[in-house]
Each structure stands twice: as structure tokens, then as C-alpha cells.
Image (cartoon, rainbow, N blue to C red; front, top):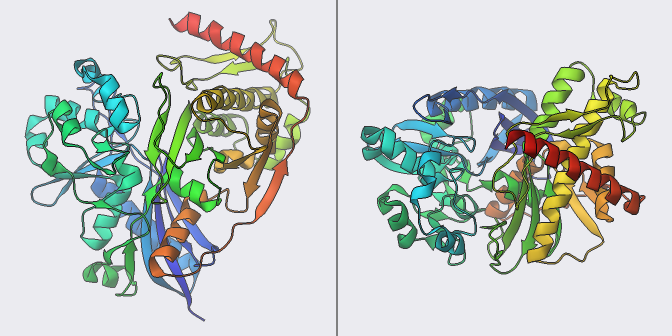
Length: 481
């Protein structure tokens, strides 16, 4: 029997994923490959990708995912992606250059922007080279010929949807990351384009998440063996779609544990931090905002340590070994981001007693990085609460980093709140894509199920351990200053 299904493309910082899922939220297959980046030595810190190579990878992964899913009829296609990454198109319609969220080619021009406080008021984020406007400024200053030939730029997910449909657009949650979008008024800002001396013509029309962008291109439908009537649906930022997949309520807090770890509060009004430490963005829900503090690179650290210490073992083996580790063996500080710090740690490491104890194991290092992640999340959560208090007794969590129950227990103990996960937590952004497809096609959405709830233990003891972590972080800051 042929099943109706959706094709969902998810371009993260580390890898590209393509999933096939049913409207009921059953993940039929998922294929992934690392995103290939190159460095540009004309900048101090610049990384880019070839969008044509990425598109070829998406087509290959799509074919593999559909083959593995079995007899399916693709009814809709959508995309989600890392939020600050963009692709530029030239006037001949070519995909010229991809600049991911980790591209900082605009850093040398950050100080030339005088009206930083004003930009924060409009965009909800303190302007840095992370965001699209500065990437474009850096391109203009070093590669003026390429810049002058730009027809438009799009977020990576909007570009993927363009490649499927031939229609340009920019979804609101993704537009929030450009520094060119008025988050409160929900439109492109002439004032912001003037601040960065960028032409307004380089942005396409804004689109609502969960709306139909168009039909799949006929030639592409034939090439991929997809139903010619398949609709291309507007997706959104990966963090927002991950949040959507767990169905939180207004005023809930959600921890999204991926390459970085955003700590999100869903709010109904455009709220700002007087000290400009948090971000405020559009949600994929039309009338909601997300208030965010971000713990920076966290999950990536965990994944790389797993590859070093547990290259052939599963998470169950790690969790079992972690039960034998104590807090005194090792403390880590590995480059997480704290909202009130001017800049992230660029050097980090582990602190343990010398000479090296016989008690120190590979589990000690993984234990320490999980504790570092938990403390970084907790520290940023406090800044979030200073802007918008959070009184609920629980916090939602999703993303691959939450595979570790030990991490969830650490967070529960620090927060003094239970940590809840849904059955969608592992592939949250992909399953969020299923929900937006259902909405666009007028279908009833599935209800995610509560999978686990970790209750807090020994909160006072963990507050003391947290203070010890803060002291270790100060040590590393002194080393790198």
C-alpha cells in the first residue's frame, strides 16, 4: 500500500538531513551527511559552503530517504535550517555563495555601526557578525564584484524551498536573524537597510510559516520521482520548528539542545532586555515571539568528546559509566557562551587534581562536559528570567543533546524544576516540519506524547557545585584574557 508522506530537509550547522515522515508523525526514514565547509583566508574568521554542492547532496539524500521509506507518495516538501545561515543569488539566477551561521566575515566592520542600541530596539538582538547584515557587509568590502551582482539572498531553508519551487521568499522567524527585519512590526525595515548601507532590493517577499509557497517544479518532480502536485510548504528556523514539535504553552521555557543550546521562553509580546543580553525573535506561530538566551557551542563539544572517547559505543554505555563518576574528579569549561560576557571563551579545558588520579576515566571527561553544559544553560536561564519571569514548575527539553538522561538530571537539579521531554525530542526540527505541512494542507495535527519527566534532586547541593564551576570558568577566562 502506498503511504502519503512529506519530505523534510533540515540543514544544521554540522550536517544536512533529509527525512520522510507520515502526516501522523511517523518517521519513515532519515538520511544525513556532514555539510562541507571551506575557509576564506581573506578574512580573519570566515567559513563558507558551495550551495550547488549542498543542493546535489540534498537530492542524493532525498533519493536515499525515499527509497528507504518504501512505497510513499510525497504530498508536500518543506525545509528548516540553522538560523543565521544565508545563500546569495546572482542576477542570472545562480546560487553563488553560502555563508553559514559560523561565518564571521563581517567581524572587522562591527565597530563601524554606531547605532547598536537602536538596532537592538528594532531587531531584538545585539548586532554582531553572527547575523546576515554583517556577512553582507564583509562580502561587499572584500568582494565588491560579487556583492554588486546580488539579486537577492535568502535563509538556507528558504533557499532550499526556492530550489524545489522556483519561488523566492523569506520566512519571518528566519528574517529575524538578518538585522534587517523589524521584529515587532513584522516587516523589512528601511531604517536598518540604511544603517548597513545595503539595498532593499536584495530581500524577497516575507512568507508565513505553514503557508503554501507553490508546487514542486515539474522537471524536478520527474527527476525525483515525486508526485507532480506536491506542494512546497514554508518552513522556518530549526529552533522554532523544534519548539513547535513539543507543543509547549505560552510562557513555557524550552531548552533546545543541538550544536548550540538556545534557552527559549515563549512570549506573546515583544519584550527586550534593558542590558541587551537576550534575543527576541518571531516564532513560527503567527502571533508569538520567542525570548532567547543561548549557551553557545555545547552539544557540538559533547558530540566530539563522544567521538574521541566512545567512538564505537552507544549512549547507553556512556550513561552506565557516568553513574560511577563523581563531581570532584574533573571540571570543564569548553567555550560555552554566557549572556552577560562580552565575548565567549576561545580557549578552554579540564581541571583535575595532579598527579593524575587512578580514578580519572574517560567517563570523567564526558561527565565534566555534561556538567559544563548544564551550568551554562542554568546561567543563561537566569538572564532570561530577569527579562520575563518563569514560574512554572517544569521545563521542556528537546534536541539530540537531550539523549543523555544524566544531562537532564543535572539540569533538573540545578533549576529545581522537572525536565520534560516528548516522544518527538530526538528529531524535533524534522517533526516540526511535519506539523507545518499538516497545517498548510488543512490536516489535523498529531499530538506529541510525554515520554519522560526527570524530577529535581538535592537542589541546594547542586547550587554549591555550580559555584565551583563558576570559579573554574573564571580561571579559564584569566588564562585567555
